[in-house]
Every structure is written in C-alpha cells, then in structure tokens.
Length: 265
Image 1 (spheres, helix red, strand yellow):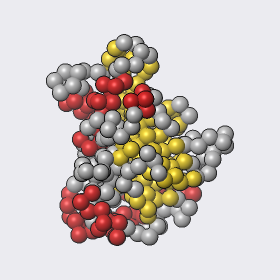
Image 2: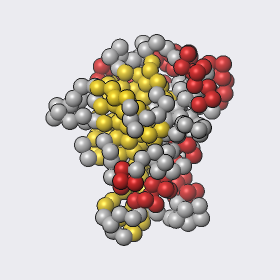
Image 3: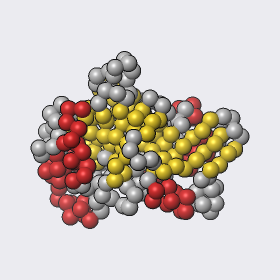
Image 4: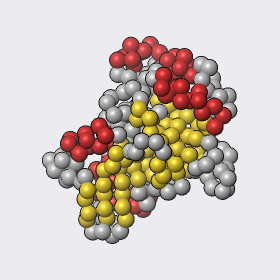
C-alpha cells in the first residue's frame, strides 16, 4: 500500500519513526484521499481518510489521534474510526486538539445528534476521550509531541514530533505564518523533515490568502533564509484539480506527496 520509502537517520536507540501517508489531498476526488498521516502504526495526525484507507486490523492499533483543526477534510472519518475502535474489548483511545478544536468536536460532531456523545465514553472496556493538548512537550509512547498555533481557523495547530534524533514538523493548514517559519529557522539542522501544506497554484494567491492557505510562491518566500539545506521539505494538501500547476511551480528544493507514500527516519 505504501510503494515509496524514504530512509532517514536512525535515532540513538536504533528505532525508526515510520510515517505512512494514508491521504494528504486538499479536497476529495477519485483516487485522492484527504489528510490522514499514520505515525508508528498507532498515532494519527488528522482523520480525513482512515477507515477507507487501511484495514480494520490497522485501525484497531490506533491509540492517539492528533487533530490539527476541525475542517471536514481533516475529521470526516473520525466517527467511523471510533466506530471500529468501539468494538475493542480493552484500551484507551485519545483524541487530542487545541481547546477550540475539542470544543468544536464536542459541540458539533459528538453531540448526540450528528454522532453519539463521547467526551468521555466507555463501551465494552474501551475508553475514548477528547483531550486538550498540553502546553509544551508531552509524550505519546516513544514520541515527544508539541503543538504550536498557526494561522487558519481558530484553534488550528501544527505538530512537531521527535523520537530523540531531530524533529519532524507537520504544518497543518496555514498560510505565511511567521511563527511557523521562524520555528523552522530556529530548529536548523535538527529539523529532519518539514511537511507543509500547499493548496493552490500561484495564480490563485488571492484565494489562498483569504482562505489561509499557501501557494508555491508564498511558500518559497516564507522558506527563504529560514530552512536548512539538510531539511527535507515536502508539500502536501495539494488540491487535486490543481496538482499539475502546483507541482510545476514548486521550488526546486521542495518535494511533494499525493498519498500512499511511506517514510522512515
């Protein structure tokens, strides 16, 4: 299912972080799945396309879900993932997000009308909870996680992950947020990979700015003087309708993904 693999350096314990791109498109179209990124088989970043992308067995291994924000393309399969996990006899599943994200999920999705209420839900020995991400670093298994706010909708965050040998940064949806790109600069060579959204081609810069997204041109300006040559920069969240345009306009030091790729580092 994951035909491509990119090898990065092992951490001090010889363990590699595995990143599987279940989906990463900025919209739904035949052959393109929306954002879901599986880390080490048990942690998700967003839940745009999980149940439709992996086996039931793979879903049952998930223990933590990190939500960047509550736009539908990032949460649309979250209820169906939880539906599968309900059937487990044991285990805790935690959905993480900023305070506005957790509030929105509780009010508008898991509210007893759209989907059963699950702020703290115990069924058949499975405990499912919605939790606000702590300030500063926190641990999920072997992962160290930290969230930072970004410009998109209220409560939007990026996630920075580490297993002890550098960092991987996932931008979430955002625009030319100086906080994000100043963080990239501050990490220097320690930033092993930067997964950054690029939703629109350059000719649609006005729409990109209004909707708080990036174009290749905006990304190039934001990266200038801020990213280490050793950092792998990977564009994702490309809208399928504009993929050819976006790819042709990406800076030469920026790769791109459309879903189905796998990385280890």
